[in-house]
Length: 125
Image 1 (cartoon, one colour):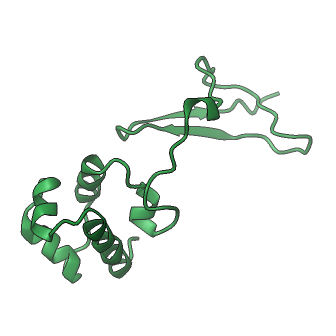
Image 2 (tube, helix red, strand yellow):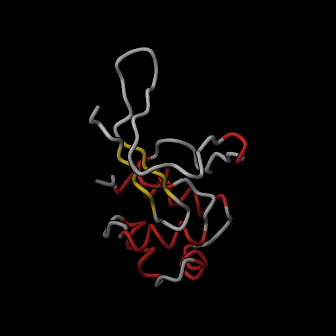
Image 3 (cartoon, helix red, strand yellow):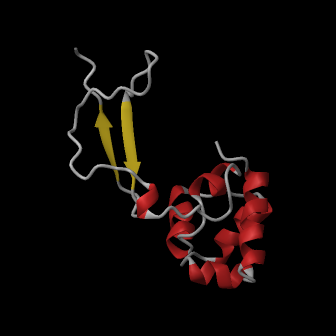
């Protein structure tokens, strides 16, 4: 559940950072000006569509930060060399994590377009 008061603070931070009025911000993310006013006043909570439009217009804003305040305002950029994701990963595999008895149960990869891939590990031995 989104804390409306804290979300409003983060939304105001976005407006201040980009030096946008509420009206200009509404035009940028293609919503009615009243939507911004109602969210900022606490009358309405942001919808999933609203969140999606913010992230589409400002893809550098981190989703986790926008929703919960955790993490950083801007996404931490990761270069492809820092990621070690195999390109031909089987859908099910046993993957040892370390010397202890822990095993990966599932890997979910999220893409910038909002889609994701879910890889469940084969737990049978």
